[in-house]
Length: 58
Image 1: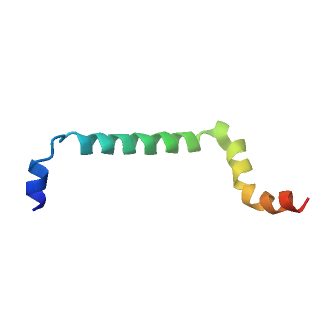
Image 2: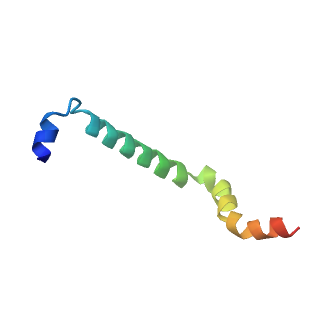
């Protein structure tokens, strides 16, 4: 059944393109997060859950 459906699929390059997009997004995010220049931003975002209660109490 699956083979019959796959033989009728008109765009055989589409799964490969989706995999490349996913892989590129993953690599870009890993590089962006691991840059040293992002450390202050990451620390600020990491504190957000703890600062949320203080902001609403004021």
